[in-house]
Each structure stands twice: as structure tokens, then as C-alpha cells.
Image 1 (cartoon, helix red, strand yellow):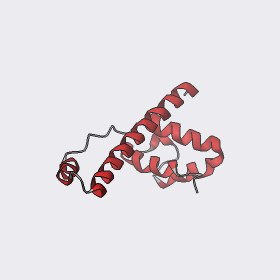
Image 2: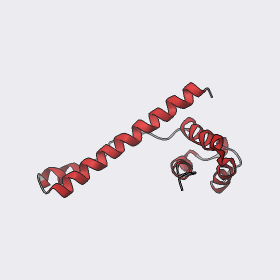
Image 3: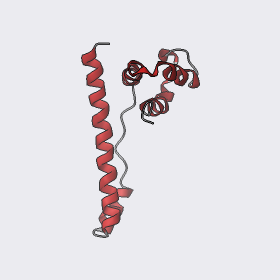
Length: 108
């Protein structure tokens, strides 16, 4: 995978995370402002927009970034924890959990 396509995937994922954070902040602001309480409740009750499924390329880009940052052993441990020796063997249903665990590598 080229650096450009990895960067593109990272930017897409960052945008998705940013949109989620904006939605959360708006909900919290509505809850704590006390104003327009009915509007805040109607927003909270509205169905959440359908999230895009996490694809192999997105997970691969994050894992590659973590590996380059010196966390190769931890990346391998995560893959094994999710039942595979390599990413292509992992069940796509595991991608969200794997991605969440990988994103915190090196942050603590």
C-alpha cells in the first residue's frame, strides 16, 4: 500500500472520528444547557446515522502505522488475541474491536 493511500485512509478515518465527536459534543451541550430540552431529547431519540463498516484497508493502515512507530510486537499480540497470525485471516466482525485496541497503542 502506498503512503498516499495510507494517508488517504487515515484522513477518512480521522474525519469519521471527528464527525462522531461533533455529534457527541452537541448532545452533551444540549443536555447541560437546560435550553431546548425537548429538542435535545428529540435529537437523542432520533436514529443514529448508519456507520460505515470498517474495512481491511483501514485496519491495515493503522496497524502499519503502529508497527512503524515501534509497536510491532504489540500488533502481533493483538492479531493473535483476535485469533489470527496475520490480518487477512481475521474475521471482519473483529475489525472494530481490533482497530479500537490498536489505536491506543503507544498512547499510554
